[in-house]
Length: 234
Length: 202
Image (cartoon, rainbow over all chains, first blue to last red; front, side, top):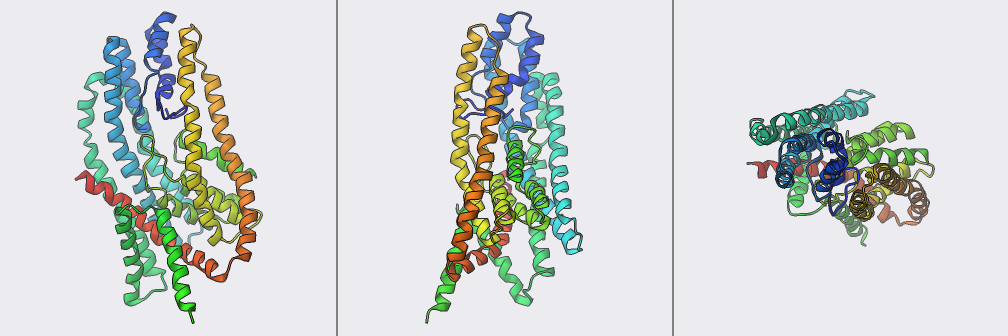
């Protein structure tokens, strides 16, 4: 869906390419197919992992609806699914997978498991791709079967709740991974173990205030140079 | 060079090939580390950039830090022919990832013209030029990524090797300390990302 992505019209061409077989089946004349294709050259955007739903939905609309409704319904569905997909995939599943994989690899590494890196990579790929591939595939048939009742069916999936639990699980792993490292592997002992914990907390606070990770890296460098400068001052 | 070209090909998974997360820093870093002969370093750098690149989501027209390019550049500089210290390679890779954003935006803007071309061809009764559009766009994006990760990285490696040898101790120690602190920044960035949405989701 995101091949040929452009800022002006976003995913219009990707959607059109995926729709072509359905348009060929629905419209018997070249003129009708051309008019249908022209309809889908306008701006369109959605979350790529939710694109299957939109694809099936639009294919169904092309068979049953009049032209004036297709454009409006397509854009509305795309926008609604974009919100769901962005919160679920980019906002929850992807960072949670990073957290799970980091914890798994940290534990594997501390057990002298030489293939810790591979554990991390495989776990990440499985945790992300199993649900998203299922959504992408199932979405096409669901979008087609349910048509305009799709939004009602999707509400029953309680996306927000599921996304919240995925984020919480990911958060637990993201906290446990450095905690495990600090306790087991760090040179810090006793109260000094709090130092990295406080540093992580400071990063969280600064990130919430708008500092990018690159800016924080720059700050660390400046602080390290400044600190050395102070120590080295006669 | 082969590693750079391979990394450029894998980077296309972000929007082209399958979006199976093969281009994510943690995956690419692990693969590149294995290819370049230091799997643990590759995985570690990949994990760091995985967390650091979660600053912004690729929603709408937003182009976040390109963690793929950053990871690949860091590992190619540190583990490639010139073997620049990781403390110097990491900020260079980070710079590559940040500087690639306007390049990516230009690549995307060039595709604005395709919709107009499709409309003209269809109006004239022709077939949509899918083959041409996909081939040109794919090769363009691949070529630019490959150029950055081969020639760009090679030039940077030579420059960094010289600069690192010339830099005063205070600067080198500064970069080494900053690299030591980066896991804490990455952990904080990941936690912040997961917390942010949790707050909004309530």
